[in-house]
Length: 382
Image (cartoon, rainbow, N blue to C red; front, side, top):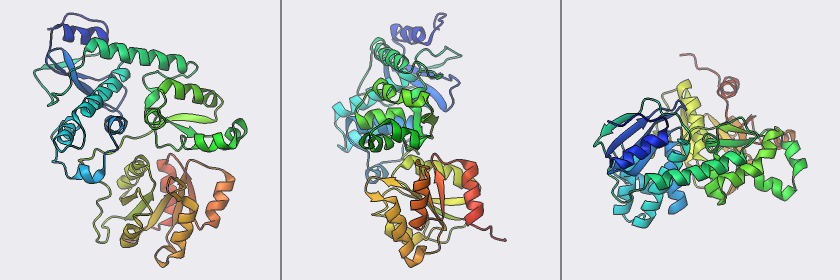
């Protein structure tokens, strides 16, 4: 049994000193799943939990190898409770990643978990001796992990001075544009277009750090003045779906048995997942369309009852796609609702001219989505 400790860091260092092997479960009251840390002979071998365990796992792959392809992931064996580690092991076995890449992936995941636990109170830790995950490729020093996470935490704290938010919570938030006109007045047109891609409600600051190869504190210093002026806001967004779970895209080609089928055309799986979390409890099935140019045939095949369409996608212009859909006989009368982080009058006018039926700002709000459905999808009389 461990001696009395007052901080989580002290507790972890005692586990390391005692060369402990097992599972530590922590509930910090931050929401999400409980935090879990796994030790082998006093070394950290994996960590998971919090609000974004899946997003964190994908992010580590992107940073240290390549984006996990859904086709490849779908061919893996269904894992047990510890899917994150199981899929890393399978990726090594199938030569999708190298051993050095796997080590960096595991280290990245543990580093982010430890950052989130910085300065957290030690509340009723649950220790189970000899409970392990099958991770046997990298064994990290608790001292070193705490030191690296602590340095990153202090940099984040300094960069976020003025925000009434705990530093460990900030990287999991997503920047959203709240005042487009003010932003246009603040920066150049080129800078505006570049920054706008950050403000779509589909990427956390952790995600942006990987996408832009900037540190969290660097991104915060860029966004903090705009946040303090109310031009942008940092908001929570949902996690991604775990790759082994049944995908919301697995829609049967038969007639939907629910209220109807709704398509979400957006290059971000996060937005599609958020829409599914709103729509499915309402009784609708959801068809995510991540690559619209390649999935037009899918739309034609399933004939959704309503389409949510993102404006800003890397390979297709939302206005042009809306106009194209309206020219096809299948979607001439289908409600098409523009879904975007840009909520200006010019965008609304352009959307209407392109043939859209309505306009919904991101991130999607449950109440406003319900209003859209009531307006455009009359209820069936059973």
